[in-house]
Length: 74
Image 1 (cartoon, rainbow, N blue to C red):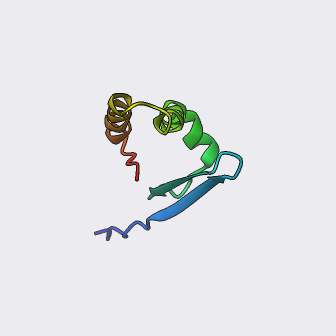
Image 2: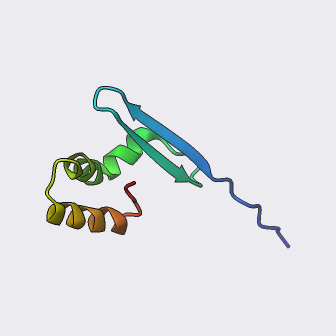
Image 3: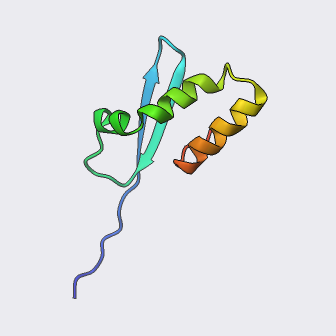
């Protein structure tokens, strides 16, 4: 019988010094690449960019959208 090996969580950090933001991803994907992640999550990145300049009602909508993707703003 094969024993299931525990998977290791990895933290990946992308810093954008021009815009003063940092994106952190915790994943168990051993083949993680930022290029693939950004292609899949372009809408999420745009929502994060809009968040800081949006009014309170729009911020709550963006927070719910990002939460549904597993992205939690601090």
